[in-house]
Image (cartoon, rainbow, N blue to C red):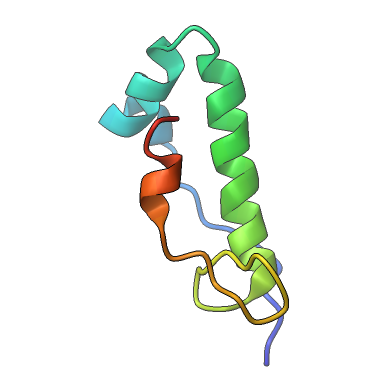
Length: 68
């Protein structure tokens, strides 16, 4: 399998309503940083964007992250 070495982010990402909502929170900058870390973790796992909890256990419950 080809290793993902880059992540495409649009230049207007901070105009996105979801990012704006994150940044409006008290610790919004931390939440935004965590979101970027999750994106890179998903890219590193190289499982079509899935974040893995273990070797072959995908995290499919995004509702756990909704509160962020």
